[in-house]
Length: 273
Length: 262
Image 1: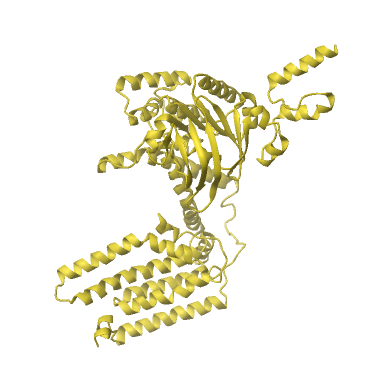
Image 2 (image 1 turned 180 degrees about the vertical axis):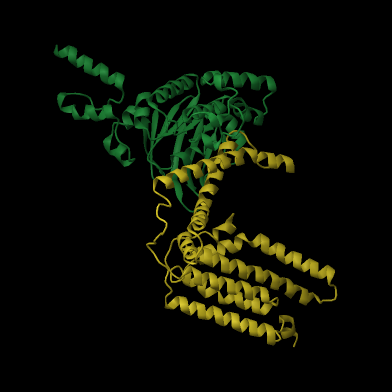
C-alpha cells in the first residue's frame, strides 16, 4: 500500500511541484495519474520509490517511511519504468541489460538466468537476447526498459508516460499487458496524459493540476466531467464527446470506451427496428 | 554543484547586464591582473570591497552569495594549505604574518571568483558569442562555444535523470572502494555520452535543414555598440590598472600587522 500524507515538494530551484497531496493506493489497485505537463504527476510518483523525498508531509510504502530507506531498497518493491529508455540502457546486450538490476539486488546466478528468460519471453524479446539495446527501435527499447524492471518482480509497477512514441498496435499490446499485470495482483501506477488510452482500460483516475489533486475516482466518473477534464488541460475521450452531443436523443453522458458505446448503440438500433 | 550557480546566466535586466560584454571582460581581466600583482591583504580586501556595488547594481547578490557559499570548500582548502605550508616551511615568520598571508591568498581567490561570477551572471551566452564574433573569431567556433555553454544545464539535468533511473534499478552510488565507485558511474556515463552524441547529430540535421552556413557573410540582428556607460567602465578599469601598477612599483604597501603594531 502506498500512503501519501499531505505531501509538499519543492525542487532545489524553488519550483513548488506538489502543494499538499494526499492519496492512498491499495495493494493490487490500478491507478492512472493524469494531468498536463508540469502538473506534478512525475514528481508525485517519484516519491513512491524514494527518488524524491517530501519537503513536508510523508510517504509510506507498505508502511515504511520513504525518508528512512534508500532508493535501491524501495525499488525492490516499487519498480519504476522511466519515460525515456535511453536514460537507462547502457549494456552491450539486451540480456545483460535485464540482468543488471537483478545483480544489484543480489539474486543468485540461477535465479537471474530464470528471471531473464522469463522477462525476455514476457515482452517478446527473446530473439533480441544477444543484440545491443542501442540497435533496437524506439518501441523495442521501451520494451527492454520495461522488461529490465519487471524482471525482479516488484509488487508495485510505476510506468511514466508509457504510451509516448508508441504506435497504435504497441499501445494496444501495452494496455493488454498492464491489465494482465494488474490481474496478477500487482499494483500498477501509470502516469500519462493519453486520455484515450486510459479510457479504454478504466483504472482509478487521479487528476492533477498545478501540484494538487483535482479529483479522483473511477475513470468513468472522472473522465466524463467536462469542467474537471478541462481544468486539467485534457480533452474528453472522443467517445464521451460524441455521447454528450447525442444527449438530446436520450443517450447517457458517461460512456468512455468503445465496447460500451457499441453495446448502447446496438441496443438503440434494435429498439428502433 | 552550487558553485556553478554563481556562473549561470540569469535573464534579468540591469545596467550591468546591458553593458558591452567586451568591456566587462576587460574589467575582469584588469581585476585578474591586479589580484595577481598583489599578495598583501589590504589591497586584495580593497579589491573585494570595491566590487560589491557592482554586484548590487546588477541585482545578482543572491546568486553571488550562493556561489561564494559553494566555493567555501575551496576557500577553506586554500587557507589551510597556505597557512600550514607557511607555518612549516618558513618558520621565521610570526604567527600574525602567516595568518595575514594566508588570508591574503584566500582573499585573492575570492576576488577572482567574485569578478568572474559577476561577469558570467550578467552576460548572456548569446551576447558573449556576439562579442567573440565581433572580435573576429570565426563564426563556426563562436557557434560551437555558445552551443556548448547552452547545453551544460541540459546535460546536468539529463545526468540527474539517468542517475535516478539507475538508482531505481538498484544501483547504489555511495559506498565501496575507489574502483567500485568508478565502476558505479559506468551505467550513468554511457547513456549520457550516447545521448549527447545522438543529440549532436540531431542538432546537426536541424541546422542543415535550416540552411546553416548558406550565406558566407552573416549579418546580426543585434550589433554591439559601446555606450557612455561602457566608456566609463573602460576608464575605471584603466584607472584601477594604472593606480595598481603605480602602487605595486613605487609604494610600500603596509601589512595589517604592521599597521596594528605601529
